[in-house]
Length: 166
Ligand SMILES: [Fe+2]
Ligand SMILES: [Fe+2]
Image 1 (cartoon, rainbow, N blue to C red):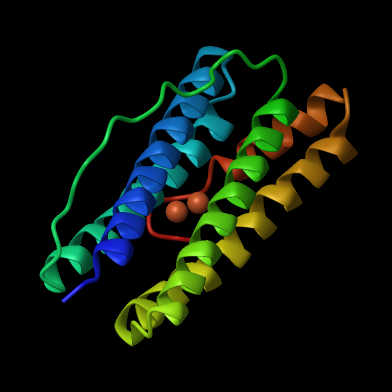
Image 2: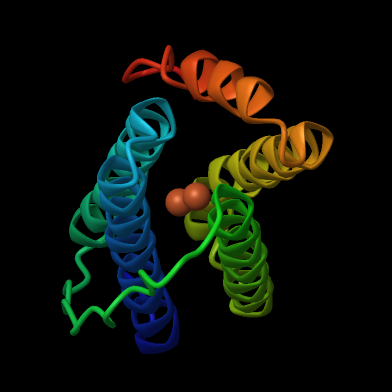
């Protein structure tokens, strides 16, 4: 059985993942509209992953006999100017999410909730990967600068990302 504190924390995290899904979806739409279809595809796959994260937590709360409480998802930002700006926002979002997961993990330790600790370990590892990827892309965009052909090449490369890679 989940304690009320852990249940509330997991529900908050479910909202975070849903919010990440919505934000990446908005980023994908922004790229699509600006004709950066490769970046748009990358963002769409990323959005799908966030939904998967949400489902992992959703199932876990149910499996532990807790009650899932879905909350309102905030409106995502969509007023970007450059591809670089979108990825900066993505990295910020991932860092915030990492903090949230770490805080929840700390509560699970405090409460001696070993099952939640074990479940969250996957998320902790996943965040290392998530932050690394968006940071890497930010770096590549910096290298490309205003070079349109470099940007187009990067766009094409990222467009090769298919669902199910991480
Ligand atoms: Fe996530
Ligand atoms: Fe993420």
